[in-house]
Image (cartoon, rainbow, N blue to C red; front, top):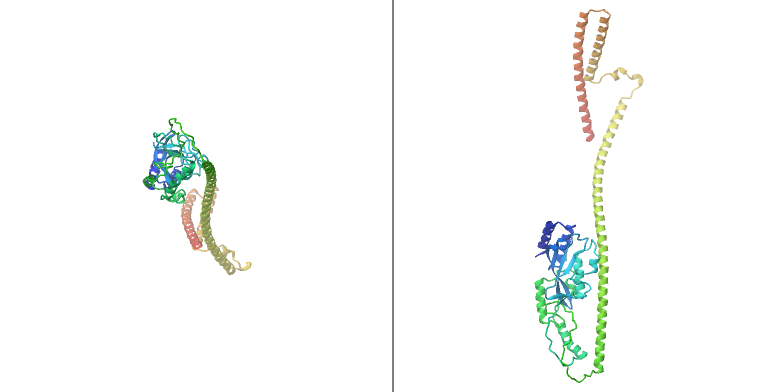
Length: 437
């Protein structure tokens, strides 16, 4: 199953379950995990807190120049990435969990400082990388020891020096065996995906042919446990004498083993401390990167707004420049008109200045005058009738004639006013077009 197929499976699970707080983060982190650890496969099933997504498969470790694959199950909680994943060992029937391991409890739950100090910026891919580094120094699984019938041996055990001489050919044979690629190229830096399960099984079968005594046929390192000495029948035997040189060699070997154990313990402590420092540095760096990304997004938004405002200001500037040009032209025209019409007060003709300028205005002035004249005539007719200076018939006859004339005059006045307003609107539109141009 390739990465795209696994990612589509994760998306279908997220669509079906709809329980995760941040589905986008789950997709991103699982994609990185599949890229670095292709042996892991996505599943979903019932957990003690409900139906959740879990990843099942093997992760690679390197122990004593041999590559092994540790089976695990990684459950993703509902609050991921705000809650850490639960990574559990999944040993086969031929395997057992190392008792008292500092990074695995009795139930197979993986323990690590990175998981116990989990933050929302942490990710499951980095957690599995740390577990691979830790388990490479101290594997969490061993092969179950087969129960064999021990044949009593009455011969005395070999001296420590003889044991060392017997182990030297085995060590030389182990060094002469073809090794896998170096740990820096193995994928613990996670730049390249680990080998597939089929390839790793092929390598393990090849290694089984020349497996040293300290390795198991199943490919999982065995922690050497003190074997119960075979019970032998009490027989009388002469005491075995040990030379001083052999005793000194045994003491020196015991001292060397003690120093090696101390050195291994110091290296383990240094490794854990470095992992804690790297984890804290990663968290701090991730937060700073997120802050820089948010600040960069804000700057980009402000840059877009400034660009838009600059374009608006440029368009306004073009409009204002056109207004300045048109205003300057109008000022020149007004100055020219003032110069042309400058006259003394004695030369001014009030009647000429107040006279209408066009035919419509002259007609309107004449019609309004006639209307007012008829209005005065009607007033005086009423007054004459009241004083009995004219008869009623004469009054009615004059009223009909004047009223008819006044009606026609007022109708004509209204038409002239409408025409004048229409002409003014045409002139205003013409001025506005010139202003725009």
